[in-house]
Length: 438
Image (cartoon, rainbow, N blue to C red; front, side, top):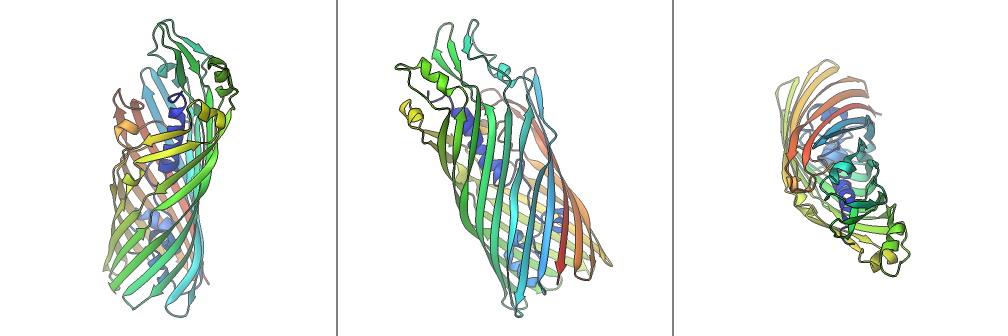
């Protein structure tokens, strides 16, 4: 029984931590239309409301009470090919965004609160019959019961961070800032629950667990610290350190044919279709540094390095709390991700003409997941991403627009790994931002 429902829970858990809560996969790589248009090279600039995400020290640059919001619309498209089967995700759009209000207190202190959706996305596969391909290696004469269908493979993922913040201008050159991060994450998933061999045969007699669902959600707490140094009006350095945050998630796991499975076990135990599930996972630490320069008055160039401690997600455990499931040996799942720490490289440019600003950017975002752990619910790609946009400012009103295009490098996973096949991913992200300084 131990292997029977391992795969769906493992995939769901990994999707929570990869695409749901942090970078790479189906995830936005930052917030704010100006920042996004400059490729996310914003740690050394951070002079608007989005600084609550990029570098809270930058909030000390605000001279007036400022309200800002930015709305992002993620439009992913992914394909998967294995053997004769080719499938792709349905056309869906996933919203994300940021808002906040920050108020100067005296000449040197700024306080306020921001909130942002670290993710708001997922995957919904148009499934032409993936299960038949996954079962194609069974010996001739094998019996599978109940009958296998084309099941739903779908996930919806999101997380929201509430970040009360304070920033201080220590001197004309040095700024410090900090945010307390209150994180709420959720994940919903539907997929095939795979099979369990009742009689090895030959020919084998195999039980089909049918559709499975997982719904977990919970809270985590952390903090972000920022430093900004501005030796002159033409150069700025930034450093941001986001602490790791433990997320304690609770919810339910459901396996469609689990009650029927009890009929195939000695003693015919009564098994529930649902089990309570618990997970404690660590959202990894993030460290970023950047520099920006103004070679001429109207031109700004920015460059960032941003590093994520992905190795913290090496081994994770889902605890299943149903007594009946526990009695047949299903009490926990262990997930070996074997991820590697990765560094993003980002660059951006801005040119100002009167009230209008033109922007462009690029970033390289390598996948932390090795071939051994990749599958259709844990998307991990090396992204070459380009961005561009513009901004218009009049009085205290600023309106900004950005567009990101994330081109994932095709991955070909060899047989013998978790889910072999050919994977592709592309994501388009239009972003609109509005702010007003009172």
